Length: 327
Image 1 (spheres, one colour):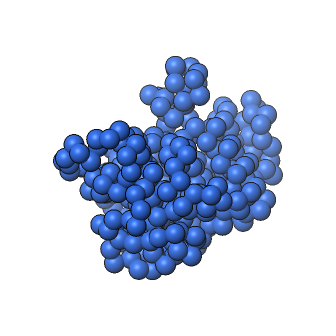
Image 2: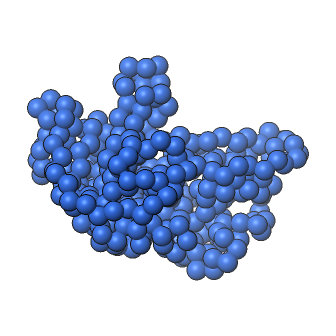
């Protein structure tokens, strides 16, 4: 099979011809149909997330067709189309797993990080962490739902009943979540890089009530703010924009250091929390909700061999919506 391989962090991916993988116990073998390019892939490739498996095939927003299953797998059969997210394996036995909080399993392994991912023509995946994909979506349209959508949805759940919702960093996750929030009657306020006029127009086109630079105050205080951009300086800014009793949710897996800020920004019962990974419940709920909204993903398609170009475009903020690799 053809694959794009990370051999050392900080270096470009290398095209390689590798043997086709075979499914192990509990696994399915997929022919990859599409794999979205996530900012977490950048954190892995650039070495901001420690100790990836090397060599590694990145990619954790996979849409694939099942071509084979292990003898102990009954959930899927050849021909099924499934999605594979970031959380790729958990122990199933710890207190977190037993409580349905497998996203916090200490033994968890992640697709495109400790497990070879979807920047390839074939991939294996734990059947427990594969999910049916609604037929309303093409392969490329469905791929961003598997991380940008799922993480955005989990962050949105932690915003509670917030009516005025701020989204800091209007990329793949925010462009999906803006549609979900609008469908549920929330007001969306989109924050982008100061020079990203195109991104602000994009947000308004998806129903944002207001869009502006991340260093500007919104026209009204926010009930909750969700931070998708990996810039720690946004946390004090989001707190300053948030109403009394509001919540700021840090939704990324990596963020630069948060600068010190005066206690008055946190006072009046504002709260700050993070989102870690996802659960199967998140996937089941969101993938059922998305076609009802309906969420329409905006994708830019790249050939598998163009993975480095897609990563470079994402790194420099030149992707509108989500980049997707198609073998």
